[in-house]
Image (cartoon, rainbow, N blue to C red; front, top):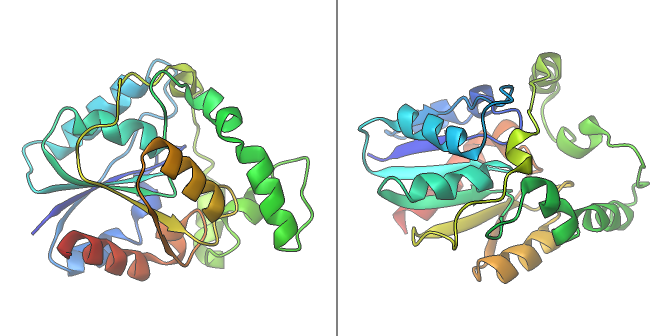
Length: 227
């Protein structure tokens, strides 16, 4: 039995994982879905890592799964606990000293997202469309609940330089939804290759694959864990 610790992205909601949690539990695992203090302006990356560590407690056989912005937090946890495996899911990969706010321009995310829209026959928009970008493959009932919640996200952790001098030695796998419109697959292949030097593994699904394809995601996580 493993302990899957699920770290959400911006908004910090444990609810994001609510469709994946029962899938992993049905496979015999302990699961910790972390609620981050995303709406607290006094909470930065250190506090986010504290929250994850506290949620884990004395559990062992740890597998961290970090969604999107969770890529800034999960490596900090790996420096503090004996993590067996880190799975980055559609994640941001920071460089030492880089802020979350600078990451977007440094990586060329905006152009990559716009170019992807053109390739897919969509018209790039000057205004961010959350439904088109995030929820295009999420079931309508799940989308309705998600959009009704509108979680807050403080800018505090985005303003802080990422504090590690290098990526932790924890075995790391990068898993990417091939239909992600926010972080397109080829964009992630470039960024991850440059920053981590590891391949990007792909699966069907958009940016919120834990909401759109929880069973397939659980299967992939299990395949990664057991190989």
